[in-house]
Image (cartoon, rainbow, N blue to C red; front, top):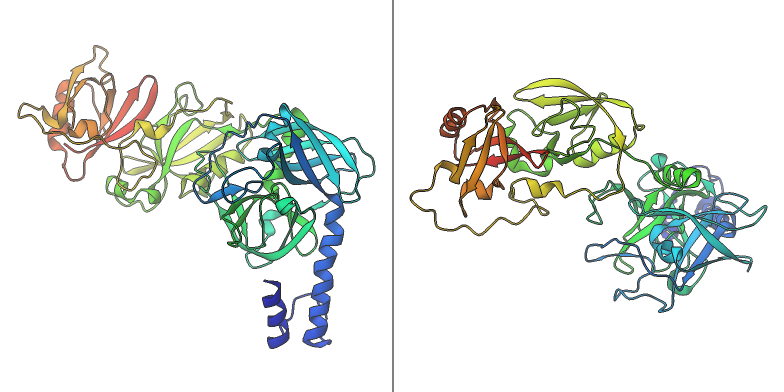
Amino acid sequence: MKHGILSALLVIGFVVPGFSQGKGPLGQARELNDAFAGVYEKVAPAVVVIEVVGGEETVGRQLPQGLDFFFRSPDGNRMQPESEQGSGFIISTDGLILTNNHVVASGETGRITVSMQDGRKFPAKLVGRDQNSDIAVLKIDGKDLPTVELGDSDQAKVGQFAFAIGAPFDLPYTFTVGVVSAKGRTNLTGSKNYEEFIQTDASINPGNSGGPLCDLDGRVIGINTLISGINRGLGFAVPINIAKNISGQLIDKGKVSRAWLGIGIMGLEENPSLKALFPGLESGVIVESIEPGTPAYRSRLQAGDVILRVDGRKVALSRDLQREILSKSIGQSVNLEIWRRGRVVSVDVQTGEQPDRLMRASRSMVPNFPGEEHAVPAPVPRPRPSEMPPGGLAVKELSDHRGVEVTEVIPGSPAELAGLQPGDIISEMAGKPVHSLNDFSVLLNETDPARGAMLLIEREGQKTFAILKP
């Protein structure tokens, strides 16, 4: 990588903004060389090597095949059988350190030691850690310690120089050079939580976890976190702006509070098979389900709504909506622009605090749409008996006329393929209310089998929808 950069300078006389233009290509190369060295000299004193000994690993994250945390070897084993090693960097003169959660997760039961470039070693305590963002904060006792300068990851540009410092393969203070090769990488780990990464081709290897990714001015723009294989030029860093928010909460109160609505979502663009149900819509985020007792449940939001904008900002994909809601304060009123039954309506929702417990996977409540990788596998179709009722389900009328209740689902039927279950209460079909058996029967007979109809359902208090193709 470095050879290619210098070759470009020498062959085509490439000029880096801010460097002298009267010294010729070789002079410019020397200035660039000094600038690179200056980044290391500025940042390295505040970079630390972190070792955790004797703890029980509690990371709790499983990564897709091909991705790995940096302290892992290519075969997936730990680099050191009796300890875990990673990197970090000092952000305050009295010893606050930023790193990755997976580097220090076992530090709650083990012993954490921090080593500095000047040879000093300190015992460290865990201030707080957040599994969802993979951010953790440590504290060592010190005074007038060297610190890094935190940059603005939102201002980082694809193509700009990027520098990584860490301890790959137990080789401390290794400095590598590359570029920011992409921004906004999401859905890398398979987590349902919102995640976002800066991608870089700066050489990063096991042991770099928690180390800084810097710009040409030596400002930290990310925390190195993931790699795709070894020496493939694919490394990923948590943007420093996200880390600032998370670490600030960990330092102030020892935990992270996130705003939420309590809904299961999916982008319309992420499942083209659904577009036929929303004619005229090219993008938006579908409300798949609404959890009971949540802010969304107490609002006028409905399963099957398509969210188009949040406080006037367009959302097209699931991550767009997640990012917008996470940027809100807990208890803040949020205006949602909704597409519902062919028209646009406005719904106000007050955010709540996301609970610590893991929510049920919302997609277990909806049909197995073609091409959806994480949906519940569709059951193997079985021969349909001649006496099968329309759609393959039986329903009964409710005395309060709030819908019809599913009493039976025939195996292998369209109803089973749609994910319907006995006990489901159907309150709406194809955008029209269902109050009686007659309502349901009429709407079912009017349904186009190829297109299907959307059913609004309540199941064990949760509001969701299904697509029935009778």
